[in-house]
Length: 126
Image (tube, rainbow, N blue to C red; front, side):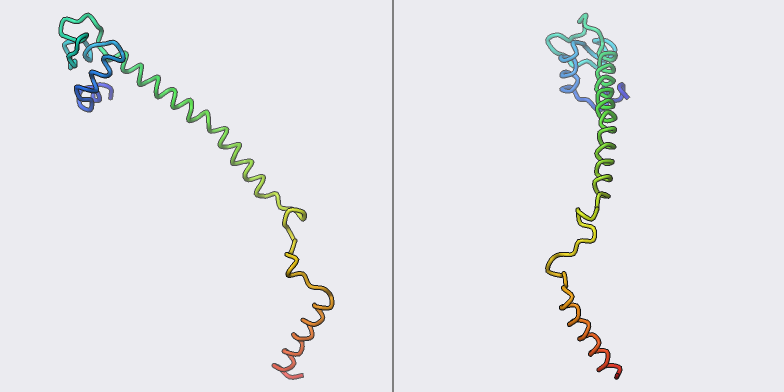
């Protein structure tokens, strides 16, 4: 993967950037796929970039791995808290409470029942 990335995916500008940041020259040595610069030329004594480039990628992936999986317990705790809070419905917090506009007194209920009985009597006969 590192070989393919260096030889096929990175252009001269990408190799030059990596060489200047890591302080190396070429892939295995200054003679192999090096981007020529003031510090990187065929007789340069700088080492090849393969090992340093591989270690850089490995460190970056390790950091992402630690950050990604370090957040898993936090996500699980948030989901558990959400589940616990969503199931917290009691008499005081909404269960069984009808809005005041829909509450009927005994007198209003008696009127409704009389109307219902009269409709049934008209429809089916008494």
